[in-house]
Length: 518
Image 1: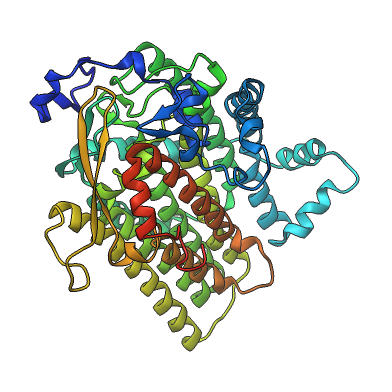
Image 2 (image 1 turned 135 degrees about the vertical axis):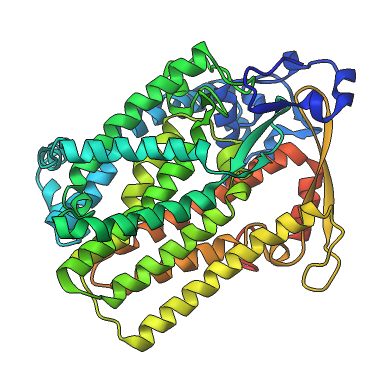
């Protein structure tokens, strides 16, 4: 096996000495970023090589293309050489170029809608009346201020603080899932301690600096500068990751597709590390999720400065902070999810965590600052209760899966022995491994039942804004689209990984998200 290039990864031969009995089969496998993205899009490995079978089953059967069974001759058409080349070009070049060029505008649209259109998308759309989209966007960008020194220093100091705490704060050593190359990433589980410490420092500094006229609400007042700074940084940072991945990859879970545009968009490495700092832990957790929590607090401070206590802001802020608290409590579990296991560190995930999460996910409280709504005690308590129940169900579902896998199936779920499938799969080096697929408890209702309470929770922290505008529901709408897409993506990935075992699991649990409906 190829030796790892980073001491933060455990090579598989240290975990399972039997791997030395197997020969490397790289000549039969596809090891590029492009291959991973094509698998996500449902093309399967056959799009990149001439094999007619993947893991013992046809590549077509593993695809997530929803049109395959509905059009006569569809399969023959879409599997022609020309169609595959076109689909590959669109997937690996056209779409990345479009997304890289377009998505930085999304946060500008949200900011402009709240600050200049009273939170109304209809008013925002009037900017594009009788003119081109580019002209309208140009006018919006003209209102964005360049980052001032206070904003730049706030972001720089926070990043340095986050990096320092990743090293300083104590934490138990935990491992991520085994990679296709046989590596096991190692992490320090100190996310929850970091979250509590950071929130505590935020409120202590807010109180201490208030008499001097210094308030974190500055970040609300100058959020356009924050958007500009984060967009600019993410573009440069992703270029750095591309160069690093090409010149000095951290592990063997890396590679190029041969397409510089796609490599920049999708990433060169699965687990890049710089001076021992895990890039995805920093971007996804220490920046994306933590800055989301901090912005919710910033918006709460600004609202209190303007109006005093507002129950709608209180409900939305509390539910969001409870959800983020649950995330950091369970951070070691997140490091074993599809975001970490499959997504390489490129523009796709890094821009999303550095810009999209802070901009979109905190948009409800951003809106509520200028739209204070008084719900009353009964409605406030109802929304808090329903939101808390949603958090509990979401957490309980995650814990069920962890408990069953931790006990190797020897435990009880809802008072009964769990219904499990011991699914075998093969690594690229030929080693055969086993994973447990749970078909009991919450996971017996649907394959992704935990998405339902997550969507419900997002609704309950959005509904305090009531229904004057659709803008506060932007995150809920996005979440439904994201999780629906992710259910297909995850089913496709698992179908290719587990083959027959996954088909057996789908027979036991036939519905993706909503029991008996979808």
